[in-house]
Image (cartoon, rainbow, N blue to C red):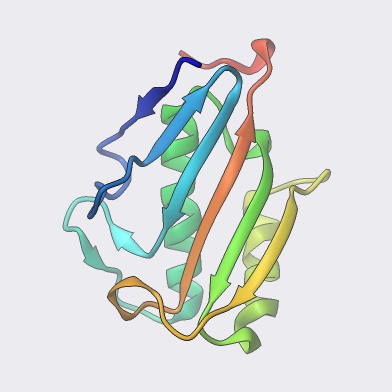
Length: 133
């Protein structure tokens, strides 16, 4: 199996022993993104709405660096420290995704890296027609 490491300066750099994404064949595994600002590697100032948008912006950058876009995501996993923010995720997702929406799981967790309230990872499948070099 051939694995390609995906890396872009347009998303936060890995802060541990992982890659922003790994591509194998037409499948891309996107690591979890938190609301880090890529240029500063600091948590975005603002409320949970701003944080969710930043997470989707970060996922967008990694998806594009992988040769696709958010429309190629087939599965998302959303981690929230407060499940009452789940409706906000739905509200913001409408700005980033169109039907057919990806499959998704939402998981309530006690804690996330750097004390943030949201982290999202995903799986993309890129067809030969959607490669963007």
